[in-house]
Image 1: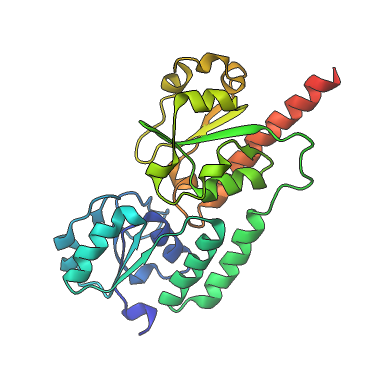
Image 2: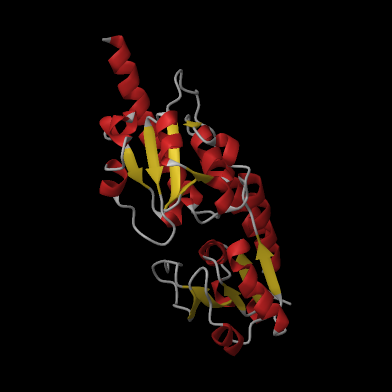
Length: 265
């Protein structure tokens, strides 16, 4: 089946973004509300959020394929399969798995050459910082605030590629968010020098972070190094990660320059 004959519904934003980048937007029949439409791209019907979807709306678009992401959408995928839909469910957690998923999606729309070219760019733009810093800052990434959930594997990998130390690196192999829950006391004990936060589906409250009991003594807060990363740039495991990585690198570079100046005086 050629890509122009397909009707594909993307229930995850990174899949929709990738198909658009591949030049297969004409194959997309429906998308999630979390996908930000690129300038000039024709709009598509919105049929889902992230944790919820209108199964009837999906079926009403007569899809040839529905693409879902993560265990959060497992129930949706099961409902669609039970109704006769073909479903491609991915659950990438590491950068290696992200790359494998992007190639898989490119194959699904017969855009393998375009996918390989974009993947080369993806790898280049996510290359580790060179030369590595003499002193790596301690970095805490917060994926959710109640309870506190630290970062998924690809986030920790990006932090390390950018020249930082993920203070909860031991937890990032845990694929389920409930297994990456940490306490406020544990964060305080790690004394992060930089804090990144990206709360899936809602804006970060900087005041809420800064005012947590005991956090006023953290180096990150004392030095004003608490930053919000847009979810689309860091929590959607697709090509958009290059944007999040650029910001992480920039923040870590600024920290490193300040550290060098401080210790030269």
